[in-house]
Length: 313
Image (cartoon, rainbow, N blue to C red; front, top):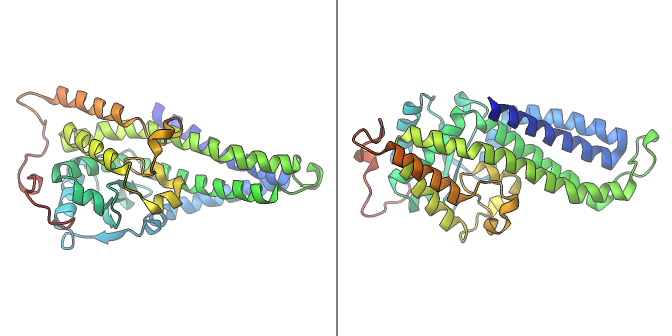
């Protein structure tokens, strides 16, 4: 409940920030336009943001015939989590990463890059997909995709202010009360503030998704090992669509932006070392004859392959 309240407050803050930028650029008229635009974006995001993000990354839907192993992993995890089977997508990208999207569990989708399917073991892939299904179960996907939409629009609005410096004229006539100063303030401060709100929303959700994801798959170390491998690879393998659309970075299980570790203060993700440490502590609690507490047995699709056959199983 506290997490939901905090996220609601943060989303309201992001919407208020969008309206403030509108005011700085266009006074009362800009405020009204920004309010209408924010309302429209929230409605649009509710119905379309999931498909929009998948399209942005060129995701391709797969099924039990085109990707039997990957699809089977997701199906078994969804059953364990008590969730409807989500749509399953693959993104052609060498960086190992994944995200979930959709407005609710009945309209959810999970996506993984070919880099993730190629580099990680089936057990590690299961850990990653369990994390993404935890986002679905917690209904984080709508919140995070709406945040991406508003933050992206906010950046574009701020850039507009940088180029045009806001509308001139006094506030009584609907113009920007601060003129060029207002435009510059919007251009400089708005992206920073939006990043801070995104960071707070993402960090709030990632720890909980790690915890619940570990419970869904029953093996916290699978997710811990996956996060370590993803983090090491993501630092030197570029994700060009993410670089072009940084407002969507918080959707991924690990920050897809190169050099993100250098800017940890503004990172949309919690510290990876802390996440792994928490999962390893969970594994200790799971240890013993009853481990993995209903988790998958290492057989069938969970057996580590001697040779890789690509992402399709």
